[in-house]
Length: 161
Length: 101
Image (cartoon, rainbow over all chains, first blue to last red; front, side, top):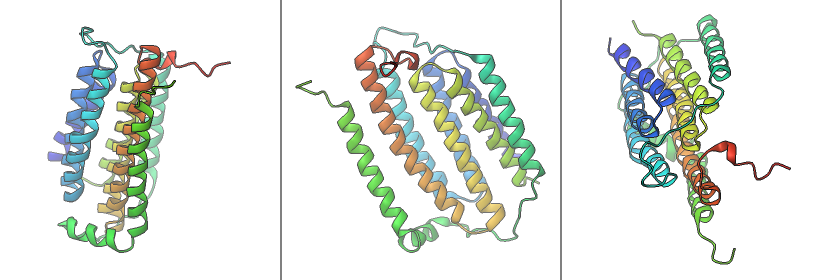
């Protein structure tokens, strides 16, 4: 029951993100999509990921996207319309993709195991990060550093250009 | 009883909505929102397989890395969009045709 409520929130607000005329409406209904996905993580027993979803997506990425919306429009440009182009071909392609994915997912015999992941996941994930996943962890931190420096370099105003 | 299939269908719906957003919007920030939807749907799949399939934390570890890459991606992409806006005074992707011969 809880699953269906969360699924309705997630998919409904995702549809508003895609179909809304106004960019502000899109950004704010993306907030509800992220909250719905975080609720799904809680339902799946992934408590650390739910907290990370809220911190990174809602606290970071959504704020960045709102900055993007505000900075790429003139302040007095109040309606912030986003034009839609080639809607019917896009709808055909995405509906076809949805059908293909759903048919494949329902027809495949997934190997469902009896085991469940340990339920407070935070300590276990920390041990995995410091153990078998140490190299990807360091690579991800270097990727974040490079991305932040690259973003700062790209938006910098060049004095001599 | 909610099983693996429910989550797979839900993430398929999220994925195709994201693809629809990427294909039909002209505003670059809106296209970025579609990409975020796609990444979220992949994450839902990974966590669902971690819960129902393997029974260990591998899928959740992958989802953490997907979130990291999404954060890096959105920072760089917004920098590019802002630079495009400074050059062309428009966030529309159709106007970014400076490389066309």
